[in-house]
Length: 336
Image 1 (cartoon, rainbow, N blue to C red):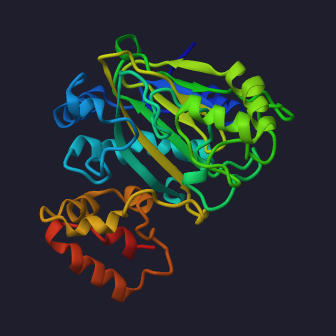
Image 2: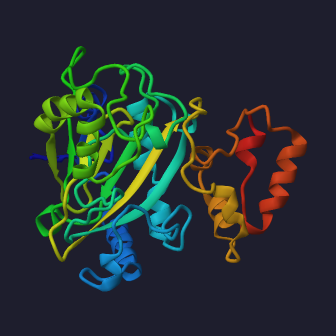
């Protein structure tokens, strides 16, 4: 079991950045405002079913059924998604300016403590895996060239619900747990996607014994678990071995999951319908959000940065007219 370290002044320390880049993960605390996190947790508790209820027992996989996909009705959730401290941390990890990173995932998930089922997609006790297959059309580049940051913001406390995230620390070049390429997992190279740990490992043992032996000897045997607390943030990578562990029976664990990529990594997909699709909302939340966002926050969503070839006198005027009712300030795009 390992614990989080404090973020100083809303920024990651050199040691925290080094841990993410070399070991594949870092758990930090104090990066985001407590009041915002408490508001998001309250919004989640109001929306999702009560632990132990019949509806809760039916939730055995991930996701919010699109309710908590950015942008959503929870203003605090939207603010966290584009919070300057979070964007700054991601930019530091990827060694990029903020306007060169892009949001590709923001969703809030409940996980309920309950008995395991025999379903392949049951996330009660998850199989160990890397996240890249359902984010990217390709394969992660060599270790020293990371292109995405995965984030879990814990909106619960380990002592109340358990459900820690287990990770396998990378121990330098040549670590047998991190061979190239990463294909020893369900959902890759013809292996069916199976989330349930027992089912996944039984399938591999019967159909790919070398992969099953590798996973038992080098992954499960070396995993360590995060002793998070409310507000802790796990930063990890698309090529980090990890998995979810069981939640205490009768409890619920809420987490806010996010992914950011380098803008140049076009093969990493947005997991949701897309931010522009939200322009169909009757409350015009996305238009208001975009108009009042900072230049960097807009860039993270794919809005052209100042100096982009897109910007001409004509396009600046046109965009200004589209968002004029929401008070957008286009002066930063006129002065470059």
